[in-house]
Length: 128
Image (cartoon, rainbow, N blue to C red; front, side, top):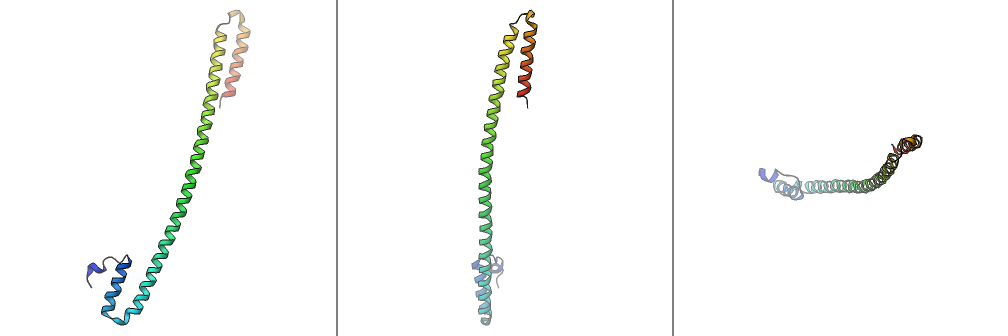
């Protein structure tokens, strides 16, 4: 038997070629070898079908996970935007109040102190 003919027994053609070569050598082996070849082919097809099904299932799971992750990313982005807007609002209010406090005269110390305490409360409420 030629080594090139037997070096790759991976496909249908190689298995059938081996069957032909064996049958040429001994014709009594033909029915047994044909049955064996058919069984190998059926098993190979079954294994491939199982692998394809497993891969298809994995792809479906990964696609679902991608959708879930995209939804979570959108939710996180929206939450971040809301928090950013809130902090911007707090800073605008803080700047306006500090500007107003800066205009108070030193004689209005108590009013300035109350307003600063109000700002501290606002910042503590906005802090994480």
